[in-house]
Length: 255
Image 1 (cartoon, rainbow, N blue to C red):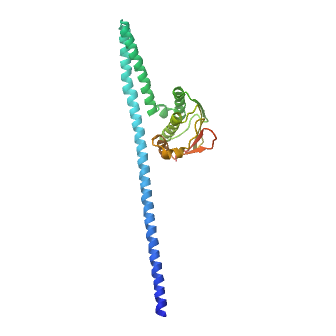
Image 2 (tube, rainbow, N blue to C red):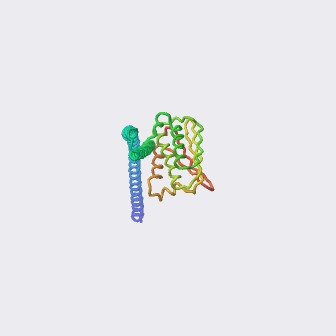
Image 3 (spheres, helix red, strand yellow):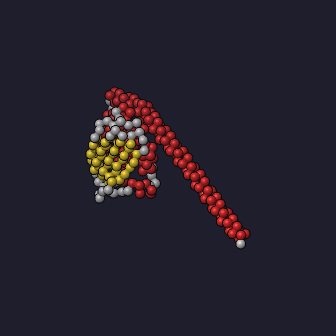
């Protein structure tokens, strides 16, 4: 009888030890995977940050090349054609030179727009609000959409990265509205406190769910927005609305 009790005791002790060992192994495995995931997530964040910084530098360089190089060469050619035009007496040749000059002027406008879209020159000197005002002037012109833009602060203090990424997010949202939203009016407002920047966009277009669209989107536009949001620690929310869409961006300064 004593031997039977001792065997049962050893059985339960052994079982408990096996279970404890199994649980320990499971916990070690889970902790290991969690650590690996955390390391990979950190590496991904660092890679994302480095990628966006390289992109910003390249945009600045290409915009400068367009403005100082290509645009300068086109100006020289345009001036030379103007000189030929004044000296030419043949009416047919003058009309051809005039058409060439008009084409060059149109090309220069396109290059200036490309250069501006790559890196707004006002961002470094005058700040985000000035760039947004300039962007909406151009957006109204080529989209024919009525934009009511309101600025509760004339100057918003942000780091260069925060200002650049926030501008790109707003720009991409407006471009997406124009391409897919079938909108005619947009209300835009931006305000800032000591620690917070808030942006609100409301349109009268077809309703859509940003995060649902993101799951099925094959393009890079929406993915680019989420990447930039993560880079500066901003949050995108959609407000409830029966018609149209309301998007709210919140950025904690220096986050």
